Length: 248
Image 1 (cartoon, rainbow, N blue to C red):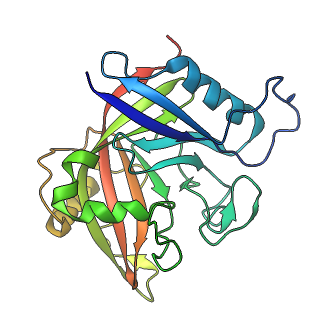
Image 2: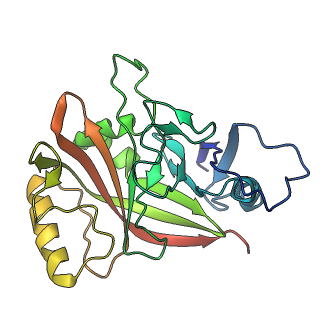
Protein backbone atom coordinates (compact mmCIF):
# COMPACT_ATOMS: atom_id res chain seq x y z
CA UNK A 1 0.00 0.00 0.00
CA UNK A 2 1.40 3.33 -1.02
CA UNK A 3 0.69 6.40 1.13
CA UNK A 4 1.15 9.86 -0.31
CA UNK A 5 1.19 13.03 1.81
CA UNK A 6 -0.57 15.89 0.05
CA UNK A 7 -0.23 19.49 1.25
CA UNK A 8 -3.27 21.47 0.21
CA UNK A 9 -2.93 25.26 0.37
CA UNK A 10 -6.10 27.23 0.86
CA UNK A 11 -6.62 30.50 -0.90
CA UNK A 12 -9.00 33.22 -2.01
CA UNK A 13 -9.36 36.75 -3.24
CA UNK A 14 -12.16 39.33 -3.26
CA UNK A 15 -14.95 38.35 -0.88
CA UNK A 16 -18.52 38.02 -2.07
CA UNK A 17 -20.30 40.43 0.21
CA UNK A 18 -23.75 39.15 -0.62
CA UNK A 19 -23.06 35.80 1.03
CA UNK A 20 -22.87 35.11 4.73
CA UNK A 21 -19.58 34.15 6.33
CA UNK A 22 -19.10 30.44 7.07
CA UNK A 23 -20.23 29.62 10.59
CA UNK A 24 -17.25 27.34 11.26
CA UNK A 25 -13.72 28.52 11.86
CA UNK A 26 -11.74 28.71 8.62
CA UNK A 27 -9.47 25.80 7.85
CA UNK A 28 -5.79 26.19 8.57
CA UNK A 29 -3.68 27.66 5.81
CA UNK A 30 -2.14 24.26 5.23
CA UNK A 31 -4.10 21.02 5.51
CA UNK A 32 -2.33 17.67 5.28
CA UNK A 33 -4.20 14.69 3.94
CA UNK A 34 -3.18 11.08 3.60
CA UNK A 35 -4.20 9.52 0.30
CA UNK A 36 -4.47 5.78 -0.34
CA UNK A 37 -4.43 4.17 -3.76
CA UNK A 38 -7.72 2.34 -3.24
CA UNK A 39 -9.43 5.49 -1.93
CA UNK A 40 -7.43 8.17 -3.74
CA UNK A 41 -8.94 11.33 -2.31
CA UNK A 42 -10.58 12.34 0.98
CA UNK A 43 -13.60 13.84 -0.76
CA UNK A 44 -15.36 15.22 2.31
CA UNK A 45 -12.32 17.19 3.43
CA UNK A 46 -11.54 18.42 -0.07
CA UNK A 47 -15.13 19.54 -0.63
CA UNK A 48 -15.00 21.43 2.65
CA UNK A 49 -11.73 23.02 1.61
CA UNK A 50 -13.11 24.11 -1.75
CA UNK A 51 -16.49 25.27 -0.43
CA UNK A 52 -14.98 27.34 2.37
CA UNK A 53 -12.89 29.44 0.03
CA UNK A 54 -15.18 29.45 -2.96
CA UNK A 55 -17.91 30.71 -0.61
CA UNK A 56 -15.78 33.58 0.65
CA UNK A 57 -13.57 34.62 -2.25
CA UNK A 58 -14.89 35.51 -5.66
CA UNK A 59 -11.76 34.83 -7.70
CA UNK A 60 -10.94 31.45 -6.20
CA UNK A 61 -10.82 28.64 -8.78
CA UNK A 62 -9.40 25.68 -6.88
CA UNK A 63 -6.23 23.82 -5.97
CA UNK A 64 -3.34 22.52 -8.08
CA UNK A 65 -0.99 19.89 -6.73
CA UNK A 66 1.51 17.35 -7.98
CA UNK A 67 1.22 13.76 -6.79
CA UNK A 68 4.88 13.98 -5.80
CA UNK A 69 4.38 17.14 -3.73
CA UNK A 70 6.52 19.17 -6.16
CA UNK A 71 3.93 21.98 -6.18
CA UNK A 72 0.85 22.60 -4.04
CA UNK A 73 -0.83 25.92 -4.79
CA UNK A 74 -4.22 27.61 -4.91
CA UNK A 75 -5.40 28.99 -8.24
CA UNK A 76 -7.29 32.23 -8.82
CA UNK A 77 -8.52 34.09 -11.91
CA UNK A 78 -8.62 37.84 -12.32
CA UNK A 79 -10.29 40.25 -14.70
CA UNK A 80 -7.01 40.40 -16.65
CA UNK A 81 -3.68 38.62 -16.52
CA UNK A 82 -2.27 41.63 -14.68
CA UNK A 83 -4.64 41.28 -11.72
CA UNK A 84 -2.58 38.70 -9.82
CA UNK A 85 0.74 39.11 -11.60
CA UNK A 86 2.14 41.03 -8.62
CA UNK A 87 -0.72 40.69 -6.15
CA UNK A 88 -1.02 38.24 -3.27
CA UNK A 89 -4.49 36.72 -3.34
CA UNK A 90 -5.08 36.66 0.43
CA UNK A 91 -4.35 40.31 1.15
CA UNK A 92 -4.78 41.81 -2.33
CA UNK A 93 -1.54 43.67 -1.62
CA UNK A 94 1.55 43.97 -3.80
CA UNK A 95 3.81 40.94 -3.81
CA UNK A 96 6.60 40.46 -6.32
CA UNK A 97 5.88 36.70 -6.39
CA UNK A 98 2.25 37.34 -7.29
CA UNK A 99 -0.21 34.42 -7.27
CA UNK A 100 -0.89 31.31 -9.31
CA UNK A 101 -3.60 32.33 -11.77
CA UNK A 102 -5.60 30.98 -14.67
CA UNK A 103 -5.67 32.97 -17.90
CA UNK A 104 -8.49 35.53 -17.70
CA UNK A 105 -9.83 34.32 -21.06
CA UNK A 106 -10.26 30.75 -19.86
CA UNK A 107 -13.33 28.89 -18.77
CA UNK A 108 -13.06 25.46 -17.21
CA UNK A 109 -14.74 24.02 -20.31
CA UNK A 110 -11.94 25.15 -22.64
CA UNK A 111 -9.71 22.66 -24.41
CA UNK A 112 -6.54 24.21 -22.98
CA UNK A 113 -6.52 25.73 -19.49
CA UNK A 114 -3.51 28.02 -19.11
CA UNK A 115 -2.11 28.60 -15.64
CA UNK A 116 0.67 31.08 -14.88
CA UNK A 117 3.05 31.27 -11.96
CA UNK A 118 6.24 33.19 -11.26
CA UNK A 119 9.70 31.72 -11.12
CA UNK A 120 11.23 33.17 -7.94
CA UNK A 121 14.98 33.60 -8.30
CA UNK A 122 16.97 31.37 -5.99
CA UNK A 123 18.85 34.43 -4.73
CA UNK A 124 15.54 35.62 -3.26
CA UNK A 125 14.24 32.21 -2.22
CA UNK A 126 17.10 29.71 -1.66
CA UNK A 127 14.54 26.98 -0.93
CA UNK A 128 13.41 27.13 -4.56
CA UNK A 129 9.89 26.10 -3.55
CA UNK A 130 7.79 29.21 -4.12
CA UNK A 131 5.13 29.49 -6.80
CA UNK A 132 6.12 27.69 -10.05
CA UNK A 133 9.87 27.72 -9.34
CA UNK A 134 9.97 23.90 -8.87
CA UNK A 135 8.96 23.43 -12.51
CA UNK A 136 12.64 23.92 -13.30
CA UNK A 137 13.25 20.32 -12.25
CA UNK A 138 11.08 19.09 -15.12
CA UNK A 139 13.67 20.23 -17.65
CA UNK A 140 15.70 17.16 -16.60
CA UNK A 141 14.43 13.80 -17.82
CA UNK A 142 15.54 12.07 -14.62
CA UNK A 143 12.88 14.03 -12.71
CA UNK A 144 10.00 13.29 -15.05
CA UNK A 145 8.68 9.93 -13.88
CA UNK A 146 8.29 10.99 -10.26
CA UNK A 147 6.60 14.28 -11.17
CA UNK A 148 4.55 13.44 -14.27
CA UNK A 149 1.11 13.56 -12.60
CA UNK A 150 -0.74 16.53 -11.16
CA UNK A 151 -4.33 17.37 -10.22
CA UNK A 152 -6.81 20.22 -10.21
CA UNK A 153 -9.44 20.36 -7.48
CA UNK A 154 -12.46 22.21 -8.86
CA UNK A 155 -16.10 22.54 -7.84
CA UNK A 156 -17.35 18.97 -7.43
CA UNK A 157 -14.52 17.28 -9.26
CA UNK A 158 -10.83 16.52 -9.44
CA UNK A 159 -9.12 16.40 -12.82
CA UNK A 160 -5.99 14.30 -13.20
CA UNK A 161 -3.30 15.27 -15.73
CA UNK A 162 -0.24 13.57 -17.19
CA UNK A 163 2.61 15.68 -18.54
CA UNK A 164 3.17 15.28 -22.29
CA UNK A 165 5.84 17.84 -23.18
CA UNK A 166 8.24 20.13 -21.30
CA UNK A 167 10.02 22.79 -23.36
CA UNK A 168 11.30 26.35 -23.54
CA UNK A 169 9.29 28.71 -25.69
CA UNK A 170 11.39 31.50 -27.28
CA UNK A 171 10.08 35.07 -27.15
CA UNK A 172 10.60 37.74 -29.80
CA UNK A 173 9.94 41.48 -30.29
CA UNK A 174 11.43 42.63 -26.98
CA UNK A 175 10.34 39.38 -25.32
CA UNK A 176 6.63 40.06 -25.79
CA UNK A 177 5.61 37.61 -28.51
CA UNK A 178 5.91 33.91 -29.26
CA UNK A 179 6.44 32.44 -32.70
CA UNK A 180 3.26 31.87 -34.69
CA UNK A 181 3.60 28.11 -34.32
CA UNK A 182 4.10 28.08 -30.51
CA UNK A 183 1.19 30.01 -29.05
CA UNK A 184 0.86 27.93 -25.90
CA UNK A 185 -1.74 30.32 -24.49
CA UNK A 186 -4.35 29.31 -27.08
CA UNK A 187 -7.45 28.30 -25.11
CA UNK A 188 -9.18 26.39 -27.91
CA UNK A 189 -7.24 25.04 -30.87
CA UNK A 190 -8.39 24.46 -34.39
CA UNK A 191 -7.28 21.02 -35.51
CA UNK A 192 -4.99 22.53 -38.13
CA UNK A 193 -3.26 24.82 -35.65
CA UNK A 194 -3.02 22.10 -33.03
CA UNK A 195 -1.09 19.90 -35.44
CA UNK A 196 1.24 22.80 -36.25
CA UNK A 197 1.72 23.55 -32.55
CA UNK A 198 2.33 19.91 -31.64
CA UNK A 199 5.03 19.53 -34.30
CA UNK A 200 6.75 22.73 -33.17
CA UNK A 201 6.86 21.93 -29.45
CA UNK A 202 8.00 18.35 -29.97
CA UNK A 203 11.05 19.78 -31.73
CA UNK A 204 11.77 21.91 -28.66
CA UNK A 205 11.01 19.22 -26.05
CA UNK A 206 13.72 18.48 -23.51
CA UNK A 207 13.05 14.76 -23.85
CA UNK A 208 10.50 12.25 -25.06
CA UNK A 209 7.99 11.58 -22.28
CA UNK A 210 6.46 8.67 -24.17
CA UNK A 211 3.00 10.18 -23.68
CA UNK A 212 1.01 10.50 -26.89
CA UNK A 213 -1.54 13.28 -27.30
CA UNK A 214 -3.76 14.61 -30.05
CA UNK A 215 -6.43 17.14 -30.92
CA UNK A 216 -9.16 15.19 -29.12
CA UNK A 217 -7.45 15.60 -25.73
CA UNK A 218 -8.04 18.29 -23.11
CA UNK A 219 -5.04 20.05 -21.64
CA UNK A 220 -3.56 22.18 -18.90
CA UNK A 221 -0.58 24.36 -19.79
CA UNK A 222 1.67 25.56 -16.95
CA UNK A 223 3.88 28.56 -17.72
CA UNK A 224 6.74 30.12 -15.79
CA UNK A 225 9.89 32.16 -16.42
CA UNK A 226 13.48 30.97 -16.82
CA UNK A 227 16.15 32.40 -14.57
CA UNK A 228 18.37 34.97 -16.33
CA UNK A 229 16.56 34.41 -19.65
CA UNK A 230 13.91 37.00 -20.31
CA UNK A 231 13.62 35.66 -23.86
CA UNK A 232 12.35 32.23 -22.76
CA UNK A 233 9.38 30.75 -20.94
CA UNK A 234 9.22 27.24 -19.55
CA UNK A 235 6.07 25.46 -20.70
CA UNK A 236 4.63 22.25 -19.28
CA UNK A 237 1.84 20.74 -21.40
CA UNK A 238 -0.26 18.02 -19.77
CA UNK A 239 -3.33 16.14 -20.93
CA UNK A 240 -6.34 15.19 -18.86
CA UNK A 241 -6.49 11.46 -18.18
CA UNK A 242 -9.23 11.08 -15.58
CA UNK A 243 -11.94 12.90 -13.60
CA UNK A 244 -13.11 12.12 -10.09
CA UNK A 245 -16.55 13.10 -8.81
CA UNK A 246 -15.99 14.56 -5.34
CA UNK A 247 -19.71 14.76 -4.53
CA UNK A 248 -20.46 11.03 -4.80
